[in-house]
Length: 223
Picture 1 (cartoon, rainbow, N blue to C red):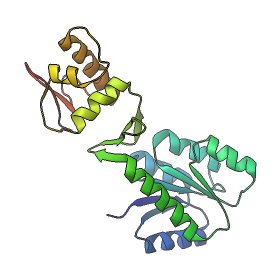
Picture 2: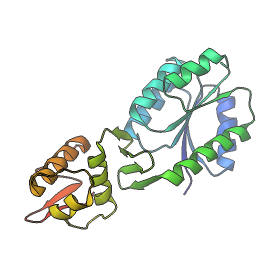
Picture 3: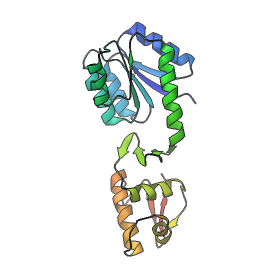
Picture 4: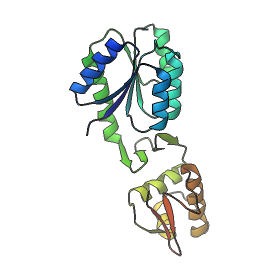
């Protein structure tokens, strides 16, 4: 399955050059020359792209503002591709959320190398389960592209459930499996953490999409 790349470049000749080159390396490229259209598309598909290649000299919006908006809605790896190559531009780019910076002119092969390097690192530490993307090394979880601010205990419970989708875990098993969960009543402690976790993933406790209650036993992950 080819990885999807979002390309935002208003120079149509450059856009075609980069797009064709990435296609030759089996990447699926969606290109825009207008940043507002690209942002609308990304907002509707926040977890669709692992990499965004972004020019800075754009119509409608300043490229740094575009970068900031992309970072607010997506965990994608942002590579700035720009003729603006002053150190101040690079510092500002990283400051608004860019992960890498390529100063034009450059060989398209260099862009491919940077993308492949990121994807190789990402594959080693990240895994996707349903709508969730998990980086165990960093103890981070994203849901449909949005980063979740979880405590260590919440992360451990979510990882336990996600790694065993459909399996029912009793409150006692969850309590004993999670280090540092506390010493109060098992049922009350586990229920409290599940409640907090549901709130953070937007799960309606009366009709949950992800974490289902199994009456009299405990919980299971279904989404």
